[in-house]
Amino acid sequence: MAVDSSSSTWSQRFEQGLHPAIERFNASIGFDITLLQHDLDGSIAHARMLASTGVISGEEAEQLVAGLEQVRAEAAAGSFNPGLEDEDVHFAVERRLIALLGPLGKKLHTGRSRNDQVGTDLRLWLRGQIEAIDGALVRFERALLGQAEAHAEVLIPGYTHLQRAQPICLAHHLLAYVEMAERDRARLRDLRQRVNICPLGAAALAGTPVPIDRRHTAAALGFDDVYANSLDAVSDRDFAVEFSAAASLVMVHLSRLSEEVILWASEEFRFVTLTDRCATGSSLMPQKKNPDVPELVRGKCGRVFGHLQGLLVMIKGLPLAYNKDFQEDKEALFDTVATTLACLEAMAILLEEGLQFQPERLEQAVGSDFSNATDVADYLVAKGVPFREAYQLVGGLVKTCLQEGILLRDLPLERWQALHGAFEGDIYASIAPRQVVAARRSEGGTAFEQVRLQLQRAQSRLQD
Image 1 (cartoon, one colour):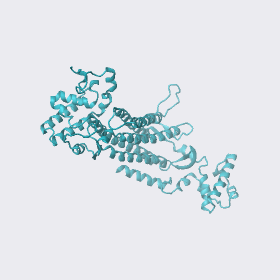
Image 2: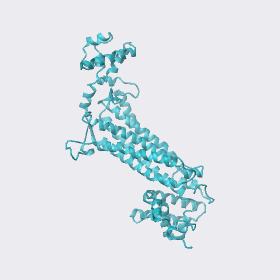
Image 3: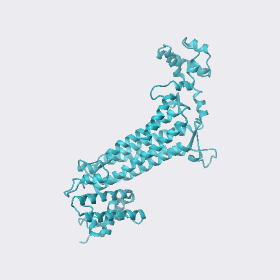
Image 4: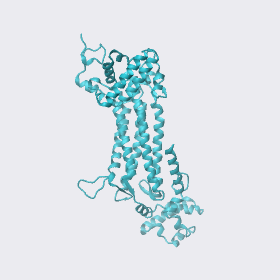
């Protein structure tokens, strides 16, 4: 019986083509075309390896390479447009190669399977995306540093539990996000080592009797090593989960900063104003200026977190080795990368030209609360009073001031001395906001001298 033309992808084991709806359901060409350039790179390395081991001739390999480069040129010109009948990017390339070269094009798939091929393509693609995200993180860090350097002497209220805690240097606050971004970069560098292991040559699951040289293709493609177990090679998607987790933490850090910017821009805080470059208005209320960028970043976290959860669930019950479920990894990874890159760029632009800190308002904020109460206790401790005793005394004093509607700075000296004989006239200088900040000289603290060291360290890291 003749084989249906629509089933020509498969061997003569099949007599009928796929149902049209199943063909649409099964196809991944609509999204895995993203991997085209990497598929071509992997195929070129594979062809040359086959020649180096004598499986095909050198002339055949160069004809295959020329054909693959023609596909690349056609893609660049917009004339390579595979459809549903191609199913995926791998078959699309192979079919076009056969159309260009005839029977020779059928030799390219010798010694490999789509299972190890797609794993290789995905790793090649992700390797480049990790580098792109690292670059975006560097820009984000530089934007933070720019604001920190411009506000190295500006104070801002520090919070715990979203309650005023202690005054800190604004640059110190911003540098905390630089440290988070540096951890993100370190995670990606570490992850790249596990991404950069080559599965090519594992074939479908068990290796191949064809005399291939896996290390030849791995080296040609810039991989550090090859998978030691062929079953693991085609079924490993740990790197996809690990990348999604790393990207989720990037988004967590962006979302935390976004939440603070949203609060700071509110009328209740007024710590920053939004420029017209990164804000929109209301369709009804003409006075409003909305913090769209940080709100969108905060919202887009859900997409990235969802992809991570989806990948975990996809993998959790899969037997060895390859399963079609793995087709679901690509859209998740593609969108995770696109979303993370877009959010990093948007937040960098917001920091570069989308907001302006309000030093006068910040100075007013740090001078109008009881966030210097700890420093009163520290003052007593320096005079030999046990901390817990000092803590209780100051707590009662704050309660009294709240009842009277005054601040600690407003208390006359005689009332200080009535509270404890250790108080002297220097208490007022000791609890002034700038002195409170300057006194915190412990390593990594908010003192101006410590912040300058942190700025220098951050600048040095970004120059490496």
